[in-house]
Image (cartoon, rainbow over all chains, first blue to last red; front, side):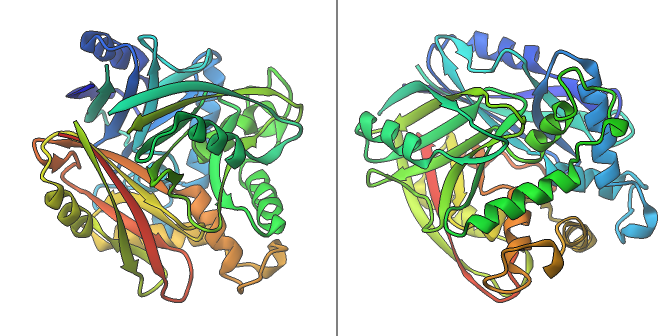
Amino acid sequence: MRQATGMLTIETRRQGLAEITRDITAWIDAQAMRQGLLTIFCRHTSASLLIQENAAPEVRSDLEAWIARIAPEDPSAYAHDDEGPDDMPAHLRTALTQVQLSIPLVDGHLALGTWQGIYLFEHRRRPHRRTLALHLIGE
Amino acid sequence: MRQATGMLTIETRRQGLAEITRDITAWIDAQAMRQGLLTIFCRHTSASLLIQENAAPEVRSDLEAWIARIAPEDPSAYAHDDEGPDDMPAHLRTALTQVQLSIPLVDGHLALGTWQGIYLFEHRRRPHRRTLALHLIGE
Amino acid sequence: MRQATGMLTIETRRQGLAEITRDITAWIDAQAMRQGLLTIFCRHTSASLLIQENAAPEVRSDLEAWIARIAPEDPSAYAHDDEGPDDMPAHLRTALTQVQLSIPLVDGHLALGTWQGIYLFEHRRRPHRRTLALHLIGE
């Protein structure tokens, strides 16, 4: 049994879901393990992780529109706006989703379902440099 | 230290929470470990995992009614409806909850609290065959 | 490779977010590992875990106010109220957040970002004694 750790930097271009499945699988492949557990940890409070459908693009736009309705940009609703109107909603949307995901590795492949992709969910309006800590344990 | 992986298939009968604690503990018992970490990974984007109270059944019906209010079936709200009006809300309810849970194994038992049960949350109206990837590491 | 398990008891004083980062890092330090994976598991259905900003206190009060709006205390909305009006909303707020978090350990430190703190989110109005199961695997 052994383990590997790494840091993955993702440059987000816009608010919303950015698929990172290939970035993750490239790192996994480089570790040359067959069975194990991958953990992805997002080191931010205004961006998060989500596994969602990677086929129909409307799923992602509908999801982005819905989260903007339940955790809206509404300056009258929040005391915290140090970095603008998208600041506090970014924290709420991070709380609603996840900053950590663990996925089993089986026969050298992540155990993702057919329609599952791994996404980094950028909640700020401007592009950001985001860092994910990766951990893999197995053999 | 060693690890075990497995696939668990659950046939859901209806939309809502289906307790799977016994299915999980049966698999755990078969691995004959004493200390470790269990990870459950749901390989779908329209069903999810949740740990909730396993005593009062009203907790589950109230939770199902509430999630239907904040991620409603509302054809006018979504562009994506390839598989009917319960399609897009199923993705939203999956995003609101989790597709992955990790639970420590202590002295041969999952470290669940007294009132905690593990549930598979079926978000589609029709019965589905759902697959969970299981990973256990320990000794 | 080795593993350690432990139980951490937290006495919550009020409804809302209580930072537990120091409690967690003290336990981590006592295990004297350099690389690994920490898992925190909250053994309750009316309290949860959240990673959030540990700088501006308004982030936490805004987050507490927002979650009280989307999972409100509203006796007319729920059948379950065995323990009072804050009973069912506590279950909903737990479902919205997480009962489990895993964080990589890198060079002897948790891979938390600069602004990330670990919080226990007490959803009941009265103080409670909460138990967290901890698991660390690594070397």
